Length: 168
Image (cartoon, rainbow, N blue to C red; front, side):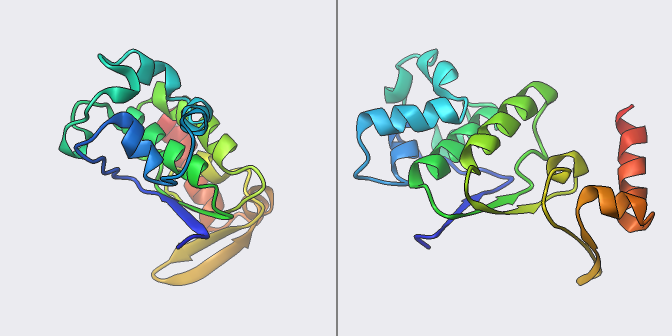
């Protein structure tokens, strides 16, 4: 578990301060390390605008925050933990466009020099991956990078085309 960090689609935050919700990833972290993780996760500014900043006590589950804000706090945890392997499980699935951009920037910070496993239905999320596995009915259907998979005109190419039409 020391080598893996996970950002889930549904984030759970504890009934505790924002600071402690981030610092739990590495309890011996300094205050500046926690703040720097929040900056890299693109959540420092909105945290500072909360009534008591990092000392704001969150409701159980983080109910007072938006989905994107909770997601960025989760990413700050992972940045602070600094594990070599990061799993993103539908990390941008339920956020609006503005939050998605901030989350993508935060994920870029999180993933520098890491092994990344991304579980995604939004194909934009994985378009720059070195290797994409298309899984259908529990089996690997296709494998390659985005360009190669699009050129092969298989299942991935069809899904990309459908998503481009849906978002146009």
